[in-house]
Image (tube, rainbow, N blue to C red; front, side):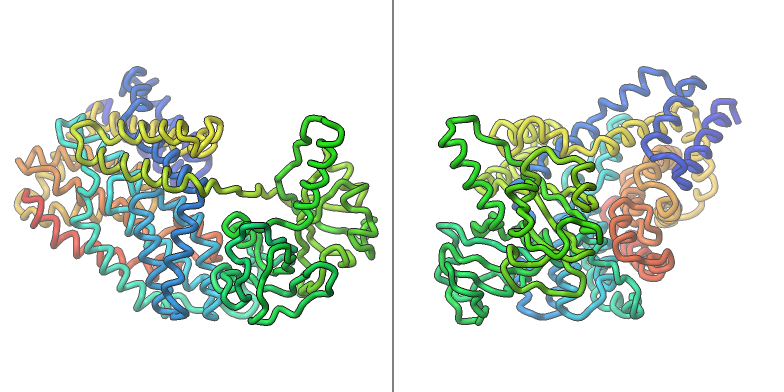
Length: 603
């Protein structure tokens, strides 16, 4: 064994240790590994830095921008809402639709991004059927992994493997290369989750997950919304409107002119100018605002006053802060026992009241008439520059800032066309798909779907840094001779067995490693060994590579996969929950791969 191999194995062990313990952020550990590989002259500095110009980096970065365009126009949220209505109150059908919907979007959009959007919706739906959200969230997380493995762009693992292949003289993946194996696994996996997940994941005991609403930002607020001119819900009855049926908002009362609060009967016909007192979480309320031309009543008043002031004084329009701030009312607050009107909340305090959360109490009247109590959580907009000192003087404790999402719904068709066109042309063209996704990212900005400054916010730079640095591990494995050494060892150990045993070995080894490490790091390490083994045995390497790609996406038994980390913390799962539900799913994927891969990719 050469010195280079020994050095590389030591660095590889150190990398595994850092990735497993997460002593430092993954991208920092990966950069440290890159530096060590260069300092010990396993790879050159030029080779190390070239990794950041890899086609995979361009493709993933461009996809972040394209997906950002879909999210900014509200297209993903809108599609999910429309499709979920098809379930018509059936628990099983709703569960199936959620799994299929998440799997579908995860095939074309980052599974992490898909889950981030889906979690609040899934929690809300599960509660409607009297289920615990933990009975839904983990299966949905697994569905995102199953969907992602079906396409080149569904998971960064496939993108990385595809980017490595040209270095060995092999054709990169097409858009649906892995779907021949991934689709049967997806179908069987969905059936498995439909049948067994409800029994494996029991409903939590009373008292557990009592703060679930806070984790999902689903705590209930009472808000007052005004129906603007041109709203599609004008002249609809309350029962026929989508407010409660689609958005799960509870309409507590309707204020019309100077009349007292009208009882929200199902036959009550909504009119322009009506003020609705509603109860719901902020995400659902924000979705309603643009979709149905509604506005927070106090925000509307502020805008009217600002416009009048500017018109009369002929001054530059005041830039009202659209961010929503949550503040907690302390027992010493100057606002306690007073209504917003009595406290001159807007005129003197320069705070625009948007919503109130009062634990265990539903407020059913005009917010301006509500007497503020200690422990209330207020959602406000700052009309002037207000700092923590000002809030402290008022006895208000800042909790968090919530950006008020303004979807560019009129550009949704443009965003969808650019996304689909880029992927379709890229998948059939002789040019790399990264070129067309990059062109699509540029088109998103040119067409106004995203502003130029917004594209930098949509890109997850930590992911790109990690991938660029981790690619050096694969180069080091090849340059040091470690891939050749391990490949020859595996070939000598399995040469007397058939191709299925080789595929089984690489699938199982990759499956075990991907439970402990990031799937990207596992793929980068395993692909060179797989290619070297196939070369030594005289096999076509693509079958073994596909086995590695699929197994690297089967990180079912631990929550280390970034997408699963979202549901792990959100659902208050135990580590054992992943093993209980994920082990059999992994066995299912193994058996299907062992059957399908040798049939399609003859070794």
